[in-house]
Amino acid sequence: MTEHDTSDPSVDHHDLAVKEAEPKAKLKRPPLYRVVLINDDFTPMEFVVEVLESIFGMERGQATRVMLEVHTKGKGICGTFSFDIAETKVAQVKGIAEQQQHPLLCTMEGV
Figure 1: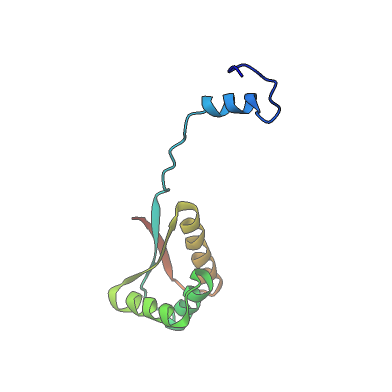
Figure 2: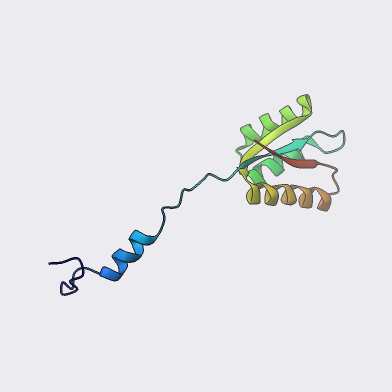
């Protein structure tokens, strides 16, 4: 059978030509961003724990540890995400804080 022989129905010659012509794409991991809560003197600690549980899916113990880090160190990391997810989580925190009339600040920073 020659290279151009199309008599074998089990071989899709068109598909082979297309696959050989396509360059192999190199996938890069997207850049990551930390979502960070910033301490203030007005937002209740319990509200911060609830935010960490509801928006970041943390268990009560982990949420409490992050809240205490925010309280004692001035800021705490909620998680590391791709840009779109980090941006969405920051917006969710800001939205719920505004809705509940708390000045809780949330930012994102590159890793």
